[in-house]
Image (cartoon, rainbow over all chains, first blue to last red; front, side):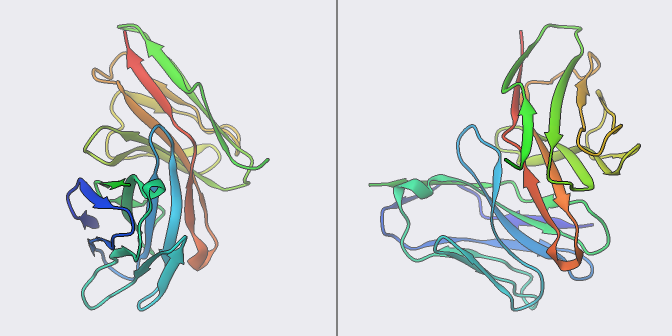
Length: 112
Length: 114
């Protein structure tokens, strides 16, 4: 079956530090890959996506590249801000159905 | 203002009581979903519907029921059979256009048992 594994949190960084949150996946076929962000008490917001191998999704300074050879979709940001503190979810949507599979989420805390 | 509306934001349930969570969308998306979120466990799929008058069980459907009588609405009922209903419930829709499929989420309803 399909699965998503993302690095365990929590992750604590100082402002302006470099961020990497690892995400690897298992899926048949050619899934689309997503990163969602959840701020406290709110629903999930789409952060970025990639639909095929070597695609790079980017938004608000965050980037992730769809690597089929390593089945990975790591999230990166060069300089984090306090306002980036949230839970980040990696997810995949297989090409064969409409059910997303989510990772367990990674809590990021950025200190001033 | 387009989007997904969930109400109420907080809901309290007494033991043995059924409660219904509302989800409405004006995005004209065909597919709708209900997820349950517990701390440290990510999101788990309860039910989903790809079209009006049709829905499928997700991974944790026991103790829940849904209906899809209108494209815009996908209410979730938490029945008394659900023994541990305290959680954050998220409704979502899917825009499906080939490679542009993307899932969008509502703001959530937090259910608490008294």
